Length: 195
Image (cartoon, rainbow, N blue to C red):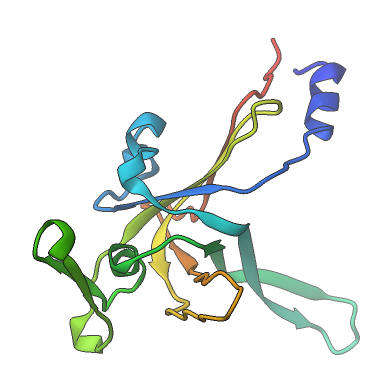
């Protein structure tokens, strides 16, 4: 069992800062299929720079029933959902094609004449792809925290161009279950498990 010092360190763990978000197409099914950190957390999978951080949610739904006299009751979980929302300040058509199921991006030309065209929309154009999302909160003092989930963006796409303001898009990823039913994987570094 960890000693009191370990518990004190855990109680003093305050997360400061944002996250980096990595995305790759997912064809696995189990938590054990998640790639190693060094494989997943590479520049090619960094989907864009984060603006105003990220938020992670786990929600439950319950069916509740109570007797007429209020002396007997029962609550049973009927559903649960996991979500990740984050602001993204650097993005392009390739980014959009990973976040929007009906989007596709193609590049024509080369060098300074290259152009990217992104097509969005039409239910018939849904690609059916699922992606693995990894958000990494880096903390050199207290240790890194990693959130991993599979899923799709359910927030659509909105880009607002305003004078003097950054154009930030805000994906909302809804978790899909791994083969064992879990929705979110949270890995914390620098945990003293005790002797």
